[in-house]
Image 1: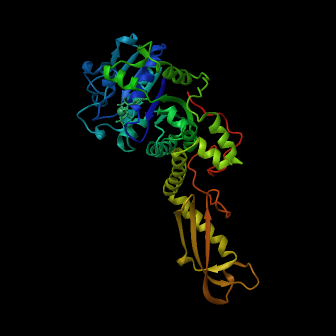
Image 2 (image 1 turned 90 degrees about the vertical axis):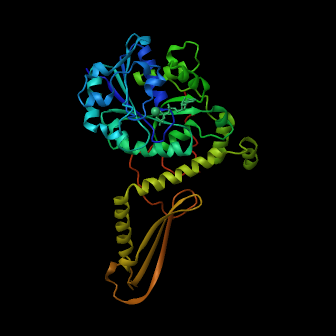
Image 3 (image 1 turned 90 degrees about the horizontal axis):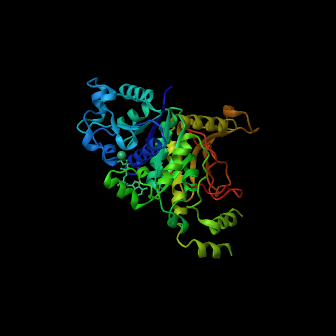
Length: 264
Length: 143
Ligand SMILES: Nc1ncnc2c1ncn2[C@@H]1O[C@H](COP(=O)(O)OP(=O)(O)OP(=O)(O)O)[C@@H](O)[C@H]1O
Ligand SMILES: [Mg+2]
């Protein structure tokens, strides 16, 4: 039985694809699934660093594609997760066109044979790197922040991914509930409505993310971290559980009252 | 009264502006990403007009323009002849000075004219018009 192949993409850079891939992958591994994370950002390798595995890299995805090593040899197993989590690093010194869509899709397929979840950390943009990253996927998670440019780019990416006819779900990252309450930030509801996309998670903007990234320690390992439950909820939704969304972002009662008044 | 409440509880509301702007820019994006559909729509549109008056097909101009709060389709259609009996299509042979029909259809709540079929390259749960907030809106999702 083959595992799920999920690409994490966004269009715009820096909205949190790598952070999401790392922490969601780690959370699923913590929950007992076999998880492989593939860094598709060739030339701008980062996933290894975010997870604190950068010192253990031997081979990379391009070398696997070129047949210079086996996939198993290139996978870095994360001992903190009892080897349930492993990553396939991107090549740091190659170009995006060092690998073809077919080669990439083939690697993803191979990975899915030995994992329950394969996540592909997509590079920003909609060029070759993006096409590679979505080539082997059968599901997509689009990450966006509640900002106009990120949302516009997410819309573009959703259009591109939709051509592949695979399910697309949305993560709204870096939400600041207090700004939403004062009407200074688009609400999760607004973002979903604008993008007509199904929501799978909301991650608040939080310094803890930067802190854990600095240390290379996934949030899933930090029992005390308040964001742990956030990624857990997303993981459970991915597993198919119906987890209710906490209403921590809306304009609250008056916001809704206003909505009603405006509607007349 | 409503204004009073709105000002009281939502003093800046740049998110509302963001939403409006995004709605428009995404429509424009979708239009520019569907050139074939636009061409087909133009042809269909002209065919409809030509059923009633004789038009100068070569001089027709149809453009999309972002107006204040709506995306508008602006059509400039030079008319060569009007069939005296009405209807009858391009057949009206009585030549007159070309008159011009200006058709404008705008999206959004402002226009009373017909809303043009905008390209939807994928399923939409709700249609675009903004000001009409669904009164039975489901509670905001978040998690
Ligand atoms: N929820 C969050 N709260 C606070 N900071 C965050 C959050 N998510 C991401 N960040 C920070 O934003 C920055 C960019 O995140 P990340 O590298 O995951 O984005 P990306 O989409 O992978 O970027 P790129 O397009 O360059 O690959 C990082 O410094 C990260 O720590
Ligand atoms: Mg990244």
